[in-house]
Image (cartoon, rainbow, N blue to C red):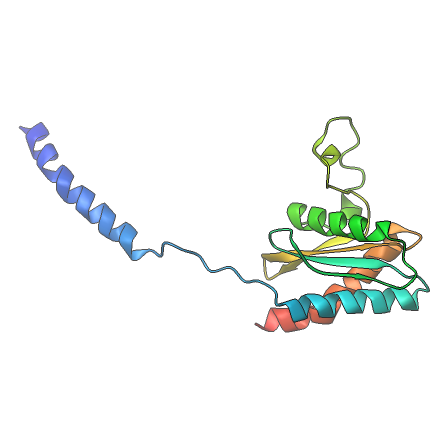
Length: 165
């Protein structure tokens, strides 16, 4: 008898559970940087590196890892474009400054050996208020520390504005 009562309640439980689920949104909103924001980041990075006396390339990628802005200063080598792109993508994907990861993947066949990932200082994520908006990669300075300093200058140029949104 208890079993029959339970079975009769099942359709009602199903309807109630569906109505609760239907009240929740079926999509999520994701913030994305405008192209102008990415351009401000890239220009600030180049300006900082010029102050350091070096010419670099900088790439700003969106949260999907796609380049939004790529700039190469006049005397920066061509290869710096590809390296900056890979640094930006890697920093975004791992949500970490690449300088903190340099000693992390040292054995053969670890994840950092995948084509397109560069674990070398000069890449930082764009993480504002816990949301990953993208990554910044800089290449061309004599050291990764200078690359990263320039990337940080790019982020600093917009972080207050992004946090206010």
